[in-house]
Image 1 (cartoon, rainbow, N blue to C red):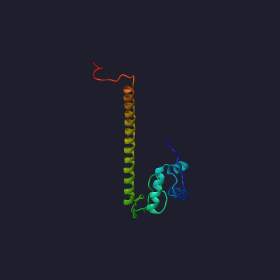
Image 2: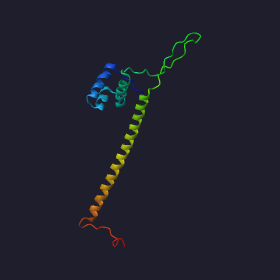
Image 3: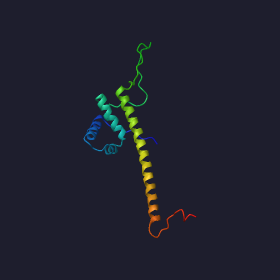
Image 4: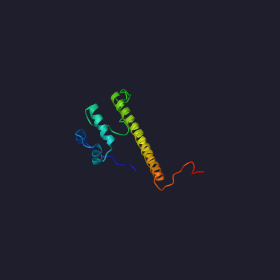
Length: 140
């Protein structure tokens, strides 16, 4: 189901970024406005790199009108990303990969801790007074 994109004006973006820089929780700000946290970080990086928050128009790039003879060359409506933007994108991608890896490791760790806890409980029960523990002689 397609979601309708909400329009947030530049002054609202600046206010959100100021609150973010002041230490407010990014998740709270994103939920308040109905956007993703990633979008806030993109705005912050965009502001730092370019000095403004004007959004790039989405969709098909606009055509540049040429003369009848085509005397004006067609220009690309999309500028190639700056090296800093490429580096930021690469860093964000690597951070996401590492967060996923850490998340998976945390799940594994939780699983093994729980298994160890069950094993230790079984050990305590079998060695408690009145319980029959398994030994080599009892298995014969």
